[in-house]
Amino acid sequence: MTQKLQPITGMALWRHITDKLGDAIDRNELRPGDALPSEHDLMSEYGVSRNTVRRALGRLRELGKIEVSQGKGAFVRSEPLQHTITVRTRFADNLAVEGLDFDVQILSQRKIKANESLAQALDLKTGDPVIYLKALTSVENTPVSYGKIFHPADRFPNIAKARANNSNLAEVYEGFGVKDFIRRVTWISARNPTEEEAQLLRQDAIDPVLLSRKIDVDTEGVPVEFNETVWSARRAQLCLPVSEFARAEDENIRSHVLPD
Amino acid sequence: MTQKLQPITGMALWRHITDKLGDAIDRNELRPGDALPSEHDLMSEYGVSRNTVRRALGRLRELGKIEVSQGKGAFVRSEPLQHTITVRTRFADNLAVEGLDFDVQILSQRKIKANESLAQALDLKTGDPVIYLKALTSVENTPVSYGKIFHPADRFPNIAKARANNSNLAEVYEGFGVKDFIRRVTWISARNPTEEEAQLLRQDAIDPVLLSRKIDVDTEGVPVEFNETVWSARRAQLCLPVSEFARAEDENIRSHVLPD
DNA sequence: GAGTGGTCTAGACCACCTC
DNA sequence: AGGTGGTCTAGACCACTCA
Image 1: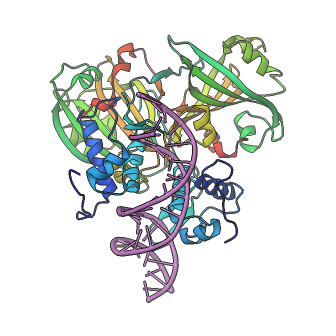
Image 2: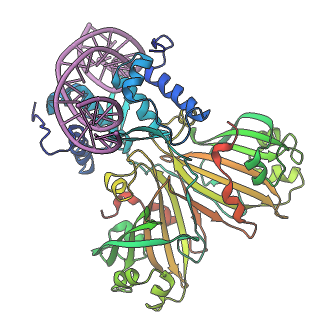
Image 3: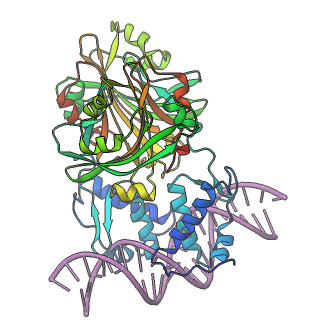
């Protein structure tokens, strides 16, 4: 035991431990991939109970500084944003990943009746038929996004099969007589994942997801797709280049090297 | 005690409790603002220890379904995304909130030397002087974003004072001879907040933040600002209208009324 | 089999809120 | 004063990983 922590300062013991370990990680004394001391070791090191140690480690997980594996241990996470996939969203095209293999897997397809908000998004009447797809997108065999896709059913019958057979969405739409499509609007938010989302994305329930909702319309302005997608925020970031000045090198700028 | 939970199914007891309470909230049996049973009551109701109850409640907090106040109790969160502020980001203008009072407070200003990534973002050389501002933006007296702002110091001396005195950024730039500015690129990601961010945004450390990084350039394409801002994801969402078809009603579409 | 984290118990004391 | 959540302890058993 190097030091018995005392609850003198008014700060919770577990916060002290979180800070100490977090600082060690920030100062690179514990390097990415390194194992942290076991919970048992931390108990005796700080003279606290196991619950207290676990609460401290839980906070470090929330902060994205460590990842924990049952039976193996806790490890400093490697390069939080280093392997992030940058997804460019442009005006007329769909989300696309540059230079990497990606695969879209249709998980389910149903025909449903539009509820009020769905009808509004797709310019339909409440109760109109809608094709409802769930799709999991993986990049280099790692899942990065899980999307719920809605198409007007009357206009796009069997679009599920077409989408499954052809990853080029523009060609899929062309088969239905849609020459071009354009983004009407995109909303972006973030939240913690549901159990289902965490499982499908093979990520921690404590790592947040980016939530994007978008409406694509045809050249007449008629909605062809409403899409709500969650992105593993550790694996994907959205990139919105809005002028010709955008450059490839921009992607190298990282937040964690900025001053405090 | 209504029911003693047994660890038969292989699912952790606390997950059962999370699911039961979460379902009750989803089915509107527990309505927004309602108090949950106290931890003591939940202990006897499910026949488990207090730690187990607390772990279940902790997960409900992560999911954004409840909020907890010491001395008062746990309450169903009201309308998760209902009061979200929609921030429109357009080509030539800065982030702006429509129809609501908003206030930008400059927390600090320093002159620093550009590190490598900052130099790259602002098209400077490493070591060049940079004005570094921290700003807290509040809407209707509630903090929604906390930003780190970087300007080339040689071109924009004393811009901190100018920004503090004038919330119209276009006019501020005009004072430095910049007739117009345009967004070069925006990156968007999400993560859990640091302690500092959670405190400044007056939000739970468990609620994620949206992270936006952007570069604004003048009409010649020369960077005038690099900005890294965290947004309280429960209070703000980004809205990116990219065509003339965008309408005000779009903002009414909510994710939580969509089918599962 | 030894070591790791995951779950759970039955207590305890404290800080905060409300009456 | 009594009820609430926040923290903490000292045990226990289990599931998983690896040699």
